[in-house]
Structure formats: C-alpha cells, structure tokens
Length: 164
Image: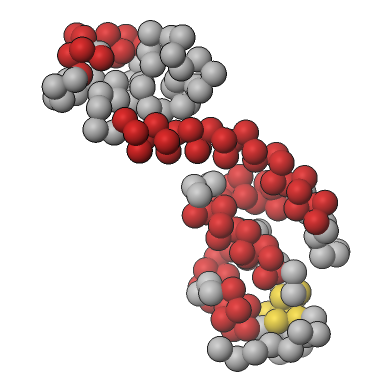
C-alpha cells in the first residue's frame, strides 16, 4: 500500500480507495448517492477531503450491520460539510441509532437461539411447530416469522403476547 502523508489534506479517488479498502467503483457509487462528496480539479479529477476516510468507514460498517443506504445518507446529512466531524458529531449520530441497533441485536439473538425451533412462519413442518403454533394460530396475526421478527413481536411485548 502506498503511504499517504499524514498532512495530506486531499486524497485522489485511488488513494481513498486504497486507504479505505473500498473499490473505486463503490466510491463513485457513494458519491452518486450523496453519501460522500468530492471537488473537481482543473483537469476534472476527483479530490476528497481527508475526513472522507471516516465517512467511508462509517458507511461500510453501517452497511455491514444492515443499515440501509437511505438511513445512512439521512444520518450523514446531519454532519457538517465544511469541517471535519467532531467526536460530539459522531456521538450524536450514533446515539440516534442506539434503539435500532438494540433491536437488531435482539433479533439476531432470537434468530441464533430459535431458528431450529418454531419461528411462527406457518410452515408447521418442524416437530415443535404444532405445539408452539397449533393450527397456525399465529397466521391470524399476520404474515412472517411472528416469533423471531422483532418488528412483528417487539422485545418489550415478547412473552406477554400470544404471538411470541
């Protein structure tokens, strides 16, 4: 990897790709979607400010945990364009996602723990399904994996509802 000097204020698309570990085509896509921005040189080459590295890392991590690009974009629009985001900026942004992340953790734990059990999908193919969901009674409450999907059975109601 080519080392970019620490005091370099702007990066080429190749430097940003190399340092962030993201393909140039992905950076172009992020820019087209308004997630990152660049300026153009007189020769029409892209130049990214150094804080773009943090934004790209944030985008990649958020994508990895399943946050949709639209939600990521909305969050990034809360960050300042004219200066490098501060620790407080990032803390404010991440705090807004805490509830959603807690919900995702709960859903992943349910998936890990209960996927081999009845999930309330209505298939009734597992031995346990006729006990946990007799005659597909959960189907009366709507479609989907009623016992695992936290959007259908939120953590705060799980255990108190007949659906969970």
